[in-house]
Amino acid sequence: MEPSRFEPWQASAALALVLVGLASVASLALLSEPARRRQGLALLGGLGALASLGVGIAWGRSAPGYEPGLEERYATLLLPLVLLVAFSIELAAHERWRAPLRTVFATLTLVGALNGMIVGWKGAAAVREEALRCEAAVASGASSRELAAQFVPWVFPSEADLAHLLAELRRAQLPPFDRGAPGPEVDRGVGPFGSFARQPVLGFPEGRIAARALGGREVAALLDPGELLLELAGDERTLALSFGLLPEANRRCDGLEFALVWRPREGPERTLLVRELFPARDGEPQPEEHIELELPGGPATLALITRNAPGRHTRWDRGYFADLTLR
Image 1 (cartoon, helix red, strand yellow):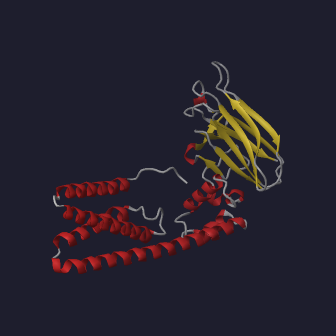
Image 2 (cartoon, helix red, strand yellow):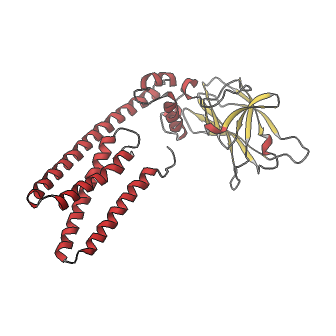
Image 3 (tube, helix red, strand yellow):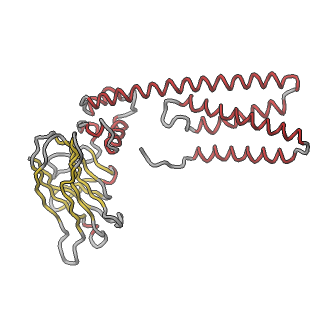
């Protein structure tokens, strides 16, 4: 759901592999006899196979946790340990015991890898079962409070984690999560806003939406282009709303679009309104729009959106919504 990022464990694991690779190449270069070089290449090939099994162990043993196999205690520490044991057998073990030790080490590594894969498969199956159960609950119309009672803390550590997942699934428009109508008890990450007769269920980006006093009432200020989502039961017929640019956008903003998008439970979404506002000229009041429009009707999600026109920047494109009423 989130952009990929470079973690510290990746650097440490990559550095370990690079150092082992350079040491291996240097060791082969120092061997003058062709037979010894072939033996060295064979040894490195075997170590590579053992390392791949080690990664399999790490992947399996870490399941079904978050990002299986990527925890640094598995990726960073296991690989050097496998290489160290293998080199110790080849360099320090007595000739008499070298072959038996190789056999024991390879057997233990293989058994560990198979055990790890079995655990990983079981963990993946358990996660899939819980995901299907959550999907079925949402499809049957369960509210966010009912979902929290079923899955927190056994599947999700907290209600906040559950709310974040539901928000991302709805944002990605994945059925049946895109048509669910969970209540505000868990999902509300923004608000409440004093000038809203109906509070939004969700808002994006959560950390950049705030309640602010403006013009004698409390508005929903979007400090970056984003959206507010309201869940409608279907009996609402008329929407009244105000929107405009925040004072700090004056003389800095290069225009901001305001849009109302209707996302019904069944059928394609519809854009009900698009307006673009620009900062006021010197001495003029900051522009504010007041609209009242008829709603299509039926259960739906109403999205209040601010966005940039193509080619516009976002740094000072800050807007707000206020005076929301539904009749």
